[in-house]
Image (cartoon, rainbow, N blue to C red; front, side, top):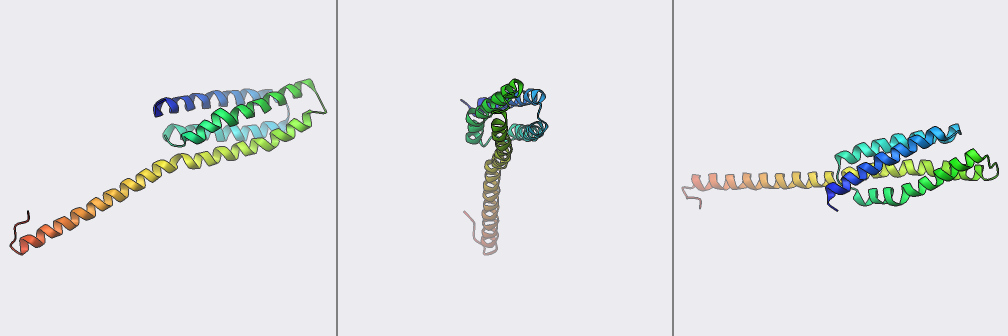
Length: 156
C-alpha cells in the first residue's frame, strides 16, 4: 500500500471511529462516562486533523486503528449493552474498566500527536543542515577564487 493510500485509509478510519464514538456518547446514560468520552472525541479530532498534515507515524496509527480502537469498541459495546440491561452487578465493573481506559486512549492519542511531526521535523533539520553546509562550501570556494585572482593565478 502506498503512503497516500495508507494516509487515506487512516483518514477514513478516523472519520468512522469519531462518528461511532459520537453515536455511542449519545446512547450512554452515565454523565461521567459521557464526559470522558467527549474528551476522547476532542483529542481524536485533533489527531485526525494532525494526520491530515503529516505523513509520518504510520506504525503508531496502524496500531491505534487495527488494535487499540477495536478493543475500545468492544468495551464500549459491552458497556452500552449492560447499561440498557440494567445489570447492576456487572455494570460497575465494566464502567470502572471504561473509566480507566478512556483517559489512557486520550493519552495515547496525545503521544501519537507528538510523534507525527517528528519525522518531518527531523527531515527539515537535515535539509537545513545540508543547505547550511552547502552555503559554507560555496563561501569557502568563493574565498578561494578571490584569493587566487588576487595572487594572479587562474582558478581552474
